Amino acid sequence: MGVQESRAAKIGALQGVFWDMDGTLIDSEPLWHESELRLVREYGGHWTKQMAMDGSGRPVPQIAREMAELGCPLPPEEIGRRMIQYVTDEEKKQLPWIPGVRRLLEQLRDAGVPSMLVTTSPRELAENLIAQAPPDTFAGYVCGDDDVPKKPDPAPYELAAQRLGIPDVLLPCCVAFEDSMSGRTSAAASGMTTVVVTGYLAGGYVPGPGYTTTENYDDITPQSLNRMVQRMYDRLAPLAGLRG
Image (cartoon, rainbow, N blue to C red; front, side, top):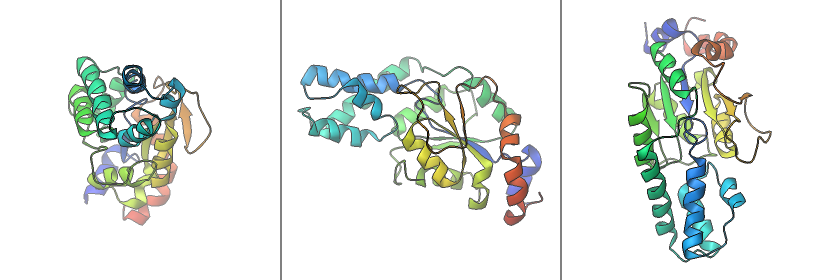
């Protein structure tokens, strides 16, 4: 029995759960927004709260370049460094976990379903989250420091699936939790079944890519996620050489 067939036999249709970090695992977007606004307050430039919210889910270097173009006198590299340092210091004190996340991570681990972190945040922040998560709940991560095109490109999710050994044909049997338009576009383009978490969107929900939405994790379990992808698995499993 192959690796993929063994996994399917153990846990059913659900091949893996892939998590964005900010706004889905932790309510950290306010920290990123504050990291940007405090730089403008201290050094000058034009950057509003709305502009900070609009940047949710985008890579730090891109935000830093835009802030420099709009008058912040620091070099983009220094803007990005200071943003990351502020958020890192705050998150190392205590991660603002979204309610229900830790319970679901533990349930997925106990059910034998691997979780992968897929974030545009730098490696230090990704590893800090995994270190503070319940033990053995993450099989790995893809982060903003990896040499791969960034969200909204599907490459981060495709790479994360490759690291778990999941064939492309079974990507629809994976669930991705995302919130930002950039992240939703990335996950959906990879072929994963994308669940949009709406409860922590600063600007409110905007229709776009995604299979379904949820405000919170109250009613989400490994079993409900498995049911979400079961019909797709029944159709695709034979193509992957698995028993449906």
